[in-house]
Length: 406
Image (cartoon, rainbow, N blue to C red; front, side):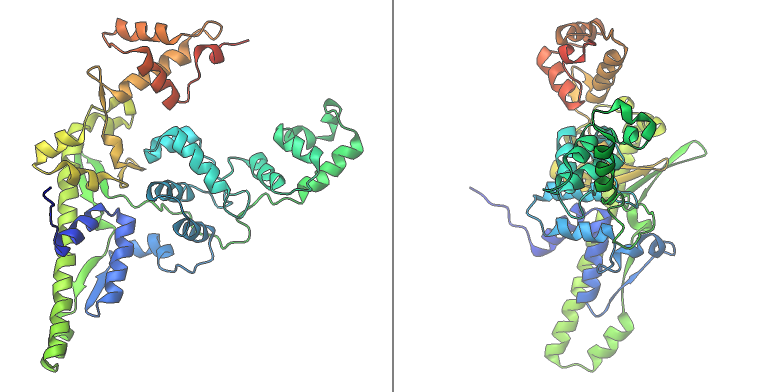
């Protein structure tokens, strides 16, 4: 078997290409610490938005949770998703975004998002990652072994709104004193799980790697270099020390300059590669970028992009994985542009049709999978029942029996 040998320089270049903008920023700071001649020159507006990255000891909920995830035993992929969810938390520590929307924004499946939310909720402080107040309090109640059972049942059955109005207590099965005792227990819970942490300004933690802008009807593509610092080498100090150094010291100095050149070249190559890919994606998915509606996405795979840009599919994969783009004020995953082709249609178009038909169906007699197959066939889209069932599950749509109104 022939093994491909990768030089340290190439390995570093591939690693830098695989970093998203946020991870690259952290890596560049480590390069700056390791090389005495290397300095980072930041864009004028960059520091205000990303100052939270400067102090890792900052007593904020975001920083604490991020550190907990970093040292956990989750896989790299699971950590990426958990970190994404952490950045969606509001100032109280709530995750008030639906799982379906999180799935669309992150590029992960609905099942993966649901599991990640559960995993996030296992991290202290209890209540973090809750969708609303009731879930936040219920998570805390479930964590207490001796918690008032009636109070726990009130939270489980989502009766908090009724309990809050004494005029409605007659609708409940408990006595007045039992309800009052339950309220005493509930009031001891913390509705603000982030209260013990320093507030963090509401900023966009996801740094886009590509930006698509529409100006005068024309689309422009920008890279993250407008958010990231420039790598600068202190040549005057380098020359001064080199003149005063012995042979061994000069060898060290020369190596530092070589390291700088390799890092700078790799960062520049990353930006160039992303820009080339971004321009092709912008042309191919122009209709989607104008509307940001997923059913406007065209079928597109790694192989097609690689062939058009004369790059390896693995390079395209590294360039897109775990990275984000910004368009019309939204930050979305770059792999959203990759759309599988099914029956000569984009996967997203098929899903959009499926959702539309289910939304408009007769709730007393909902469509069976076989009937949905026929609806697609009427549009010259040939799908099997297995494929319909697969997309239903991905979209969180129950089967016809479960959807039927009783």
